[in-house]
Image (cartoon, rainbow, N blue to C red; front, side):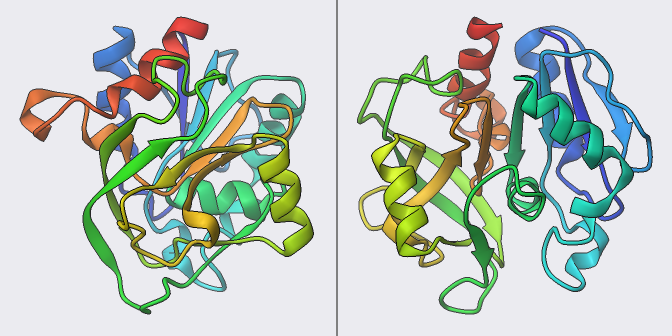
Length: 221
C-alpha cells in the first residue's frame, strides 16, 4: 500500500504517523509539504495531528486553504482514501470534506489521556478488521475536539451509517455530540477522528489496538 502524509507548519504527529505506516505497510510514506500543488499517486493520504499554523484563527481553518488541499479535495472526490487524525480531522471539516465542526472541549481544557472507543460499524475500509461493537483503547491529545453538527446534519450522518467510532463507557473527553469520535463522508473514503490510533500500534506503546485501522486499510488496498 502506497501512502503519503501531508505536513503543515505546526504539524507534530506527522513523524508518529510515518512510523506507524512504515511499520504496518513495510514502506516509508511520502512526505508532502502543504505548499505543494499535487499529491503523489498513492492508496492513502493522511492528514496528521498537530497545531497547524498554531491554531490561529480557528483550528484547521488556515491549513484548509493551503495549496495542497485543492488536489486533496479533487482526489477525495475521485475516491482516494483519506484519513485525518486530530488536527487532520479539523482540517477536513474546514475544507468541507467531512460534515460538522470541531469546537473547544466542553471543559475548555487540553486533554491528554487514553479513552475507549466503540466501533459502530465494521462495514468500512477503515474498520473492516474490527468487529461491530468492539471496544478498544486509544490515546487522545487535543483542545478543540468537541464534535458538533446541527440536528439535520446529525440525523443524516447517523441514519446513513457515517459514524464509525464513538467514545465508549463514559470516556467522552470533550463533550462531542452523540459521543462521536470518528465520522466519514457519504462516499465512505474519507474518515476523520480525534483519537490517535498511530500512537498504539506496537508493544512499546503499551498496546496494539490502533493497528486495526491501518490493517483494515491495508487489507482493502
